[in-house]
Image 1 (cartoon, rainbow, N blue to C red):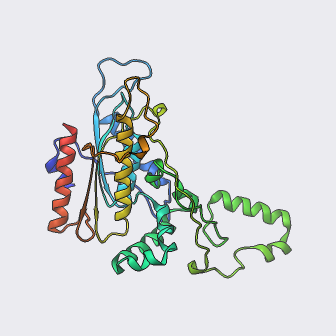
Image 2 (tube, one colour):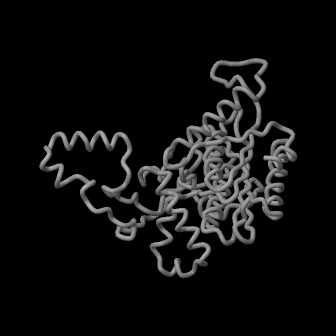
Image 3 (tube, rainbow, N blue to C red):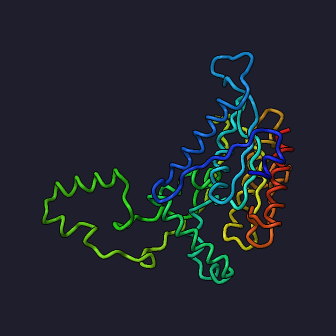
Length: 314
């Protein structure tokens, strides 16, 4: 926070979102969205003239975050950027978890696992364990707000089947109670998941892969203008490949929006082009984990991100 405050001339707000085994997804999304609404309503200037259907406020916002915070910042940046309204114009994210579903794909290939360093493999296992804590059900991390890469393409894996031993939410508990009341106590003894021995994670079936298909995001109907992105990651981080893909998809989206004919009709073969680097997307890899840490290198990376945000807000 001190680096941001010293580098930026605008107010800096830290969002203390909730994300743990007590406050699971989508609580964090709701917290960040509520904070953004508060900032727009209370910190941005009001328009002198207000027209019906138009926001009462005007201004430009920037957002930054790291790891899970980077995922939330990316999701907000991709959706809170409506044309003609106060919104996000720049996002600086460090090691964002852009695709939780991709964690299921890497272990499917033994060759890919062998090619990973011990640090990366440990990092991947920790991410999978954390994912089980913050998401009630597998389908929850297939939501684009949880895995922002899915705004641009479909997941490359099917939603894993949920076992009886996985934690149930309130609606599941009510449904299970209703079934138990219907079938009677004898059947409850035979069918209740509490009586079964818990299955280990190793015993679960590996999710099956599927073909990834691209999504044209944002659609014209959304009336969005994507902000500039500065994405950084560490070479020893298991999610480094995710950040590279996110940067590529963003560049392709910017290129699609810029390639139009004189009549405003997009080319039918635009997806075959390699997206040019227009400067709207910066992707940089650092040695090690590449985090915004308290080390000299980590502070330097944070300072670079803060300076970039300041330039984008000018």
